[in-house]
Image 1: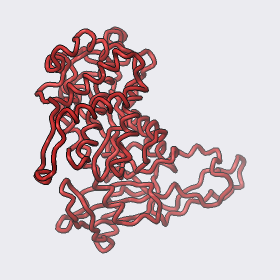
Image 2: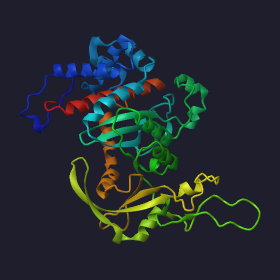
Image 3: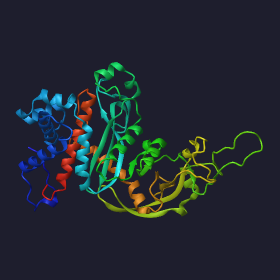
Image 4: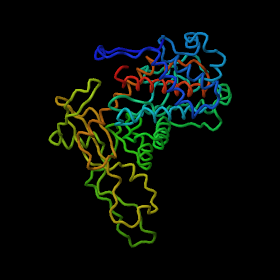
Length: 422
């Protein structure tokens, strides 16, 4: 039986029978699987897998999932569908996102990574590495993901399995895990920005990309998001260097000696660390902002500072070949530096950098900066309800198939929760 829930607010509303929910699930499965899977038997297997993920049961790995489905599912056929069949999991994620995102009032895209604890050493990408999920170094895989976060729900926009350098260089392990030859080493930020750029081409409302310091401190990620026309509000460390908006960049005066004049504009002051800059400006420049935050959606107040700055890496990365032309004064790209300094605290607790327009209201900047908490709720539900981390196979493609099908199952549940008689 498909698991359905009854909240206190639904007591007086007639609930749909499980047969109606199952009928909608089958229709949804056919819709999101159709573009990716062209073999009828595999479409059937995909629908059964979705049902197995959603039905009640403590374990969502393949063997107990097939057992719960009874005689409707054949284990060998399902295993081949999950681990070997060459259907494109990205198309399932895309179809799910394009179906669900318009229903949830998308406000942000959240970029993060999560750990998948594993025994042994043969699952692709597994090694002893730090996982925020574990809160320590442990034997695990790391999956990078991007999620559209809305006022009424969330939906994943993509998954990428992080492959450490030692895995990329080990031909035998790659062969056993069936890792495609074209897969090369990429950092987690590189994987994440690829997901965002890919999703930007889908029929999904674009929204500012949010992420923690591991992503915000990565200058290449911020530059690529900006160059692709994507906005961001990313957490950064207090040690990141910036120039204030008052910094002037000018070309050096010509000298009388031989040689060409430098075309590299120079700042009239040194960059500052963001922590030192906010401390120097002091509490008198803080603004009290009211915004809605947390699972309860209650209006909250906190003190923030909003400062226009230019990232120092833009100046240092200048190639000296005059790509800024002959303009006499060219500063780096101006961005928002956001700092939260709660009342009673000796200093700021968090910092963010954002390329949102200069006209953006403080309330929106503060709300976006604090919105990233929803990703943790997403991970808990994807793992706790649908077995995101229960895949036990050792196939590279199988991991992507499983995460895509979990995404579809969660997308269906999101739509069901929006129904008045869910």
